[in-house]
Every structure is written in structure tokens, then in C-alpha cells.
Length: 461
Image (cartoon, rainbow, N blue to C red; front, side):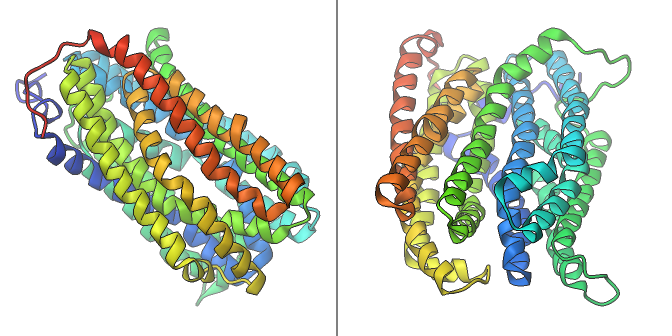
């Protein structure tokens, strides 16, 4: 390892506000590009056939499961790599990064099997319309059976982000999103010499965009010099490294998967209520809210290695400084999203086509659900702190509380007592409850684990 590689990392020295912005802005842009995949698909599909929009809305929980598995494992790698770099254990950081890349194969096999055998029964369980079922099965089969592209790309992104490199991950996502946007209308509607694939065309465009992003990411990983190096020669799985990856990664996978379970539960309530329009409203909301939450998750990616590095370096002042700065930026993002949901919900919904009933129910739902954005901003940053310091179990408990223990029971009770239009109030109530739990966890850790860290004299901007 050269002396240049071993020089002091910027995550331990740069003024905090400038560091967080330099680390987070590329990731925020990158995550916004990730949101483009599903949103652009839904916009084109909604204007092509509203039953197709219902289909991709019902199919989205399985896509969330794919995202959960790939991002969760990658975050486990990110957290461990950044901590080992903070401890100056470069060999362990390299071995961890290599393990992350090899674990992609196991994730892919699982989703390949789902794509081959599970999609038709899954769609049939949530729709009695054979056209909706067919559309959803076509879309999911393509996305899941070719999921290796996105799984590898995500792993490379999180590995590079752990070293403080945020530019290349942004470019990977940008390339994939641009390719997807270009090919969506060509393959859905059949423009020029391209055949009309309909809903399946949206899935093909998405997968092709992911392929381009993956090829670019792998080339950069192996052809450029980074603070971590992939060492495939003589590779063997090490039980301790895998255990440490999933100590953070598995709770993150469960935490993200809970979102899929929540969406399944909500769709089940809407089906029982006989409200297909509510399924479309919820699907549209879930796609649009990603443009608010994804920048916060990008902020999460920028803040996490900073917290992890300084936790490993036992610098409590900088660790807390990163948390505070992250909360302020997250609040600005989420408050902006709330204003948009209140001021122009009609403009947002109209992009997806539909009728007057969709517009009326959608505007009402958007204004109620968006009340959860502000408490969610603070909750996301506490989750970042817990994950970066190896306390992923606390993040898992927060997600269980918000999306299973609170939101689904509250939504069900509101439906049977007041009607389906009141289900949306479950979102802000559950988010506030989760935030209270997060504050309690933080106070506990501040008195126990974090109190043991050395207090450095470096100023926090």
C-alpha cells in the first residue's frame, strides 16, 4: 500500500458541512436517478394503459424486495469498509469489498428463482383481472430474471462510496437512467423499427439501462485506482467477514423488505375495500415520494461513511457533527417535498394519465400522507447513525414499529371504522411513533456505547 493511499482521509479532517455536501450531493443525484427507473416506467405505462399502471403498482413490492436485498448487503459492506478504513486496517477493507462482490451471486440466484416460478401466483393473489395479472407477470419476470445487473452495480456503488468517492456512483446511475428514459417510449409504444412491447417494453428498457450501468461500474472498479482493491485471486469466504457484513446488512434487508410487506398489506386492504383506484393512487404516490425520499437516502449514503469513519477513529465530536448536519439537510429536503404535495398534487398526478376520480382521490391522499415527511427526515438520519456504527438492530426495530406494528393495524382500523379514504392518516401517525422510538434508542446509545468514544478537539463546522 503506497504512502499516498495511507494519507489522512478527508472524512477525518475536512470541515463537516463542506464534507457532507461534497459526499452527499453526488449520491443524492444518483439516488434521484434511481427513482427515475420506476417513475418513468409508470408514467409511460399509465398513459399507455391504466390497467398496466395497476399491474406495475401491484408488482412493485417484489421490486422493493430486490432493492432491499441488493442495497442491504451493499450497505453492510459499505459500513464495514468505512470503519476499517477509519481504523487504518486496509487489508480487511480490501477483503470486505471482495466478499461484497462475490455475495452478489447468491442474491441473484434467489431472485432468478422468484422470476421463474413466483410471479404469476403473486399477481393472481392481488388481482382478479386477467389483463392486469398478465401485465404484471411479464414485467416482473423480465426485471427479476435479469436482476444481476442492478445487484452488481449497487454493490460497486456502495463500495466506492465507503472510500469517499461519490462521483463515479452518480455517473453509474445517471447512465442507467438516461438509457432507460430513451428506450422506454421506443419499446412500450413501438417507435420506428422497434416493436410494440407494451408493459414488457418498460421492463426491457429498465434492464438494459441497468446493464449499461453495471458494465460501466465494473470497468471503473477494476481499471481505476481506489482506496480499496478487489482481490479475486485465491479468494475464500471468511465466516467472520460475512458475519460482520450482515450484522448491518441483514437488518437493513429486513428493514427495506418490511416496506414491501407494508405495500402488500395496503394493497390487500384496498382489494378488500374494492377500490382499484386506491391501488393506483398508492402506486403513483409511492413512485413520486421516491423523489423526496431518494435524495434523503443519497444524503444517508454521504453521511454514513463519515459517521462510520469517525466512529472507527473514536472521534465522537465529528460523528455527532455529521449527524446534526445530516438532520438539517434532510429537513430541508422533506419540507420541500411536503410543500409540493400540498401545492401541486394535480400536476404530479396528471403525468400518469387517468380520470377525474383518480385525480380527486389522489390529491386528497397526497396531502395527508405528506405530513409524514418531516418526522421521517429525522428518523432517516438516526437510522444512518445506527447503521454506520454497527447498531443495525435499532434501525430494524424502528422499521418494524413504523411499517408493521403501527401503520398496517392503524390503516386497517381506519378502513373498517371510517372508510378507505381515511387509511392515508396511518402514515403520519406511524412516522411520529417511529421517531419517538429512534430518540429513545439514541439516548440509550449516547449513555452507553457512544459515551466511551474519545472526545477530540477538532472543530465541527
